[in-house]
Length: 471
Ligand SMILES: [Cu+2]
Image 1 (tube, rainbow, N blue to C red):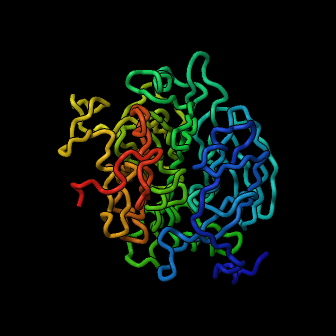
Image 2 (tube, rainbow, N blue to C red):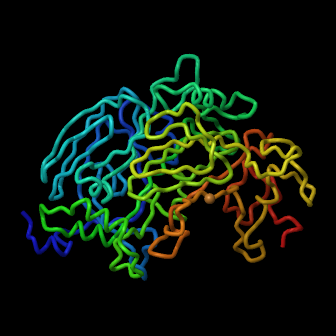
Image 3 (cartoon, rainbow, N blue to C red):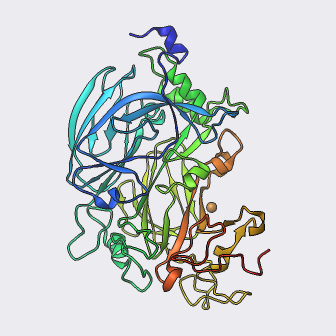
């Protein structure tokens, strides 16, 4: 038993401090080259999972030498990976038997729970359990600590567990599901085949002329969470064996009055997508899709926190193919959808040409592009991609490429980093790096930064200097 006085000051041990690094993913069981070869996820194969439930302090998005921005968390620390909140993305295939070892190194009971798949039951302080379970049904799952609900989960003990189907239904293409509805199956069957959806099927990868391969089974995980450094620190400082009652925790986290000083505010200060915020969530390849028109992807949303979020993606509407594990009969096509606490939702992003690109018939779908005032086509967006900000003579010119659209949460006014910086809140985006339907080099847009380039080369199809109309 540790000294109670030490507990109260949160320095009972040398705290592990860590920054928001690269999210790591683990692949359990049968070979899954589609994820192991996908550069966006630094995925590693493992034979079994080995978690320690512990605690650590994370440097948050706005942390720097003059602005301390740190948060205490409870952490599912996997043996092969650095500390991170959330726990690692775990990918496996339907039917895989997952061996899992969990050690509780904290001083109250904890658990590891996956709804419908696995329940470790309470693990006493200092105890290790070794268990196994079957990944029975394909889908998106939140793994979390379901004890003292929702305190242990919101304190950081959560992550994403993804089960892929073993095979498509006979005569059909892959979907993310074991038993897709006819409507969802039809959508995935249409990708890469139907007139509306030229390009690749979801399961289909491709090599590309400029050597950036397109992975098959393109998917992204938006695991949503909110963090309160003051409240989490209070929970972490309780004497050994004491817990904060969930009613008190929820009251403080959701309903305390806003206090304009971070030192006393119990409501959340940080809003994260898979552990990242703002610029970092927008420019992280496992969160923000970087794909071409004709390369459909799946975005898996999970809400580990206590706030409802409405994630609005620009440039493409998405199909809502599953809600809380229920594959939809009629996958509605929307640009924003609510993700409530503990919800899992799948967005299917068809990656069509942005419908705001002017075309001859004005139909919001790919059609003959109109001509700009400078005589070029509106698609591919050569003029936008050739724009340099600031312009080249300043010496800092950065190309406005790839074509980048934002994604943000519609509960935005309250959603900042440390009270005021919305741009460091729960935002990301979708980038267009080309169009599979455009012949020649237009199939790949140039990738920024492209400063003083030597001239057109593979994948570079517009003048390397700013066009004459740009100044
Ligand atoms: Cu919006």
